[in-house]
Length: 244
Image: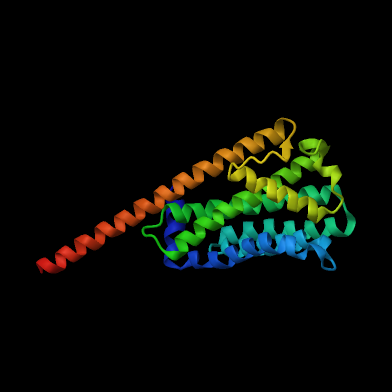
């Protein structure tokens, strides 16, 4: 616990939370550019390229400390190399490796950011941006998890009575569909056009829906507690100034 507390304090003191802006830009860029680049030459690589940009930003955010830098570089470098190998050879092993390593890096980044955010002593712009980044990374992380499930079982997600893994040939278009499904699940919209099939996919869907609701409730509560604590300190400081 002391290690985690020291990590959070050093992050805040060194301005590490300011790195969240770059990560947020890469995540928003993924969501915006993925459909926009569909019709441009080389559009079949758009998800892989945008994902690599997000992974690079995640490595940067996680590089404040020596041991987190080493782990992040190993996970991120391995994931990017596996993505490149997947696109060049179509290897199933490389595809599973890229998804697993990418999910590992996102999990590490989420953990480090949550540790810093939950131990922050005041509400700031960086705190809010960091919280948004964590929420978007949860959705992207489950996207990779669903992709892994499809690699293991093509019928894990169904659309129109057909396995999603087999009905869409373009890998980026398939990833865009999975990303859409992930955020629909995270926000508990439950539109029903894509449905999970099998225990693994169903448990992932259940877990994402629960995490999405809990995260919003806990994060908003944390922001409110920090704001009220800061407001109380300002009132006490103002009262002390008048007494003096």
